Length: 287
Image (cartoon, rainbow, N blue to C red; front, side, top):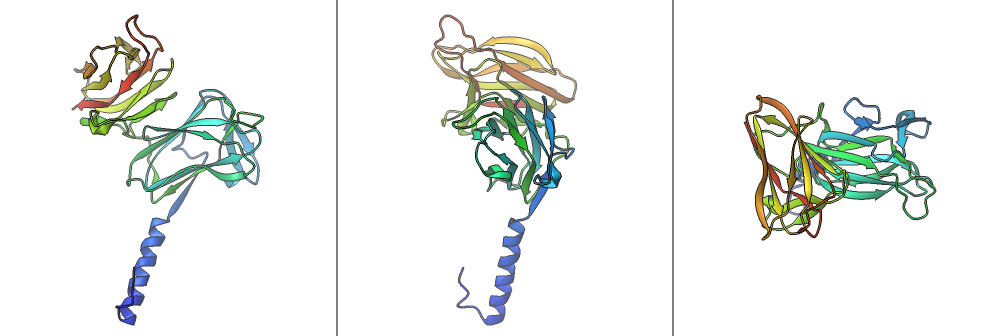
């Protein structure tokens, strides 16, 4: 921006406005590891050390231990420890997976993962401990010290999808395991996710009376289990030849209110299929 053509007074005002906007964009809210809006599962251990933010952090090397936070804002950073005993973690931000190696010599209060230039929200960030080691490390520990939210704050209780089309990157979807992104204009919204490892799951929380799962099905597709509100409802073989976009599962007639649908990958397939991939493209929630 150039102020050469502005009178001196207007230039000062313009610079003041520019500084105010820049400062607002950089507003950071620190959320400590024990905040009530951070959800933990699995075994986590407390570490008391003055070098931690607020003096305390959480850590674990238990496979499958998880932590998640839903927030509004344009960015987030996961703050933790980088040391010689730190390991790998799978991070999901609105359905996009990143494998993070926390090994290093950076010490305490380091940004282990950051994302910026997000829409104002809401968003969901989840971290899953894999009990895996990257090159050079002597351990697989993963630390949660704090989260820095840019221009926003935590959302109490998370979010639930409402009536209408829900894409695979909606913050109401919670991914567990390894899910991979796929870009194709044939997908709803141009994107989908897929997984093949047994035990990988996706859960969508929604408000309504019914839900429909839409996905790509092909000659490399496998078998998945579907649960609604924690109860197993169906085992679905996603194999299809020729390949096509299809309604995979649909359920209506639920009591109006909050529900959940979980898709679990079995890692198996029928004799005709060449793989065990299961796709998630979108969901249609019925009011």
